[in-house]
Image 1 (cartoon, rainbow, N blue to C red):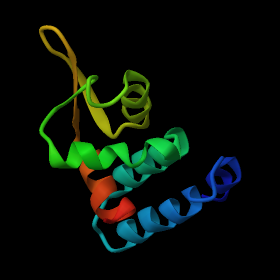
Image 2 (tube, rainbow, N blue to C red; image 1 turned 60 degrees about the vertical axis):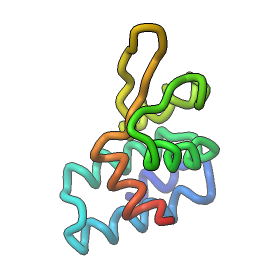
Image 3 (cartoon, rainbow, N blue to C red; image 1 turned 120 degrees about the vertical axis):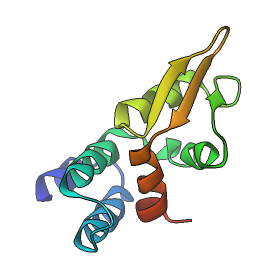
Length: 107
């Protein structure tokens, strides 16, 4: 964890890491999810965090609603899945993203 904190490029990321560890201690997430969320916190640009809330309120989101570079960053962080549609790129939040919103971001 100290290694991650040292790598972080934003002042908010240590708080998110602390919340992730708290969720793990409280058995809300398991060890694998903790590791994946820690990777996501490290990978995600904090400016994109608010876009996750859009995913929480909708089943699918298109590139007309969220820029593709934001979707790519959130997918690289492991919080959304990108799927192709007939004429559009669709994304949807995955289980890890749901837990990230519920226990780490907190409304």
